[in-house]
Length: 399
Image (cartoon, rainbow, N blue to C red):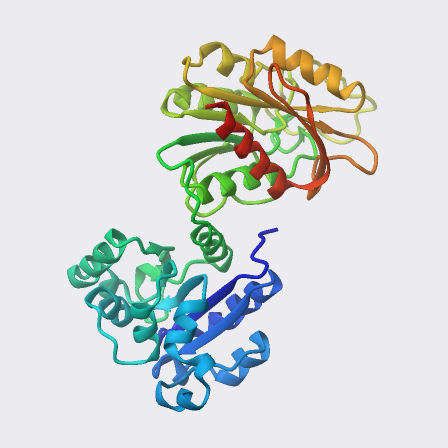
């Protein structure tokens, strides 16, 4: 789960048909502990009722500049100074033009000019409006000034056309907001490759053997890397969770597919983190047609898969860092330390599996972080987002 606790976000809502999604976005932000101040432009007031957003956020919705003289806490200067992030979703071509040109003719555009908080825009408009040279020039200006963008997505628009212009999905906006709120970019300029999720090894065209890996640890690592300014690649098996917004993701199924994908691109990255629960074995000869019910016994002959993280460590450049994971049900520290030495890793994270404290598929993990020449660091029932942060802190200390 993302951690926005005690953050203050200004949610600016403009007059796109996607304005109705602002209610869901505000609700999701509140679920994460964010204080949300909402501001509706004049056009947005025709599409979403202030009362709905007030009920969700618990704060008065700002709709006009001058009535706020009686409530200075909602004035544009007061809000501009206290918010940690200005999120405009949906953002129309009009507000992008105002922000790029420094026009301040209503409450929202005035506040965007007055604030020094990070700006995040989620555009939503007709495809022709979005692709128009004027809009693209305004986006370029805002990007050069440090503003961030999420979306737009492509698809069928309310106007009936197909193309770019749909508001980004709410989970993607939340990911982008989470990254924008974190200003410590200590991995800026670094490229991080993360493997994640399980592998599915086919038995026949419809059946497979696999494991219970959810991909939550890989996702937490990718999001932490993005927040800290890194460029992130992700090679993921069929996980329960999707990669964060902004990640260059490659989807695979089998361990062989993951091996080939990792080895083909590892030289492009500074750090490789093997968080995937790679299948140790595969079916020696998968059936090409479905095995029919009625057979009394089916014998599956297994053969070992190639060791991805060992191959990466063998092929790495001197300046590259390689991090592995070890999941064990017994003799956890002993086996993890052996893997650390045997595979010549820079770091290994040892997780307990089995029983109530099993790390696989859970939101929390009991873990040890092992680095050559250092005492193991123990973390008990740590959220995977916290574990990801500590892993990157330790990576930073290695340099």
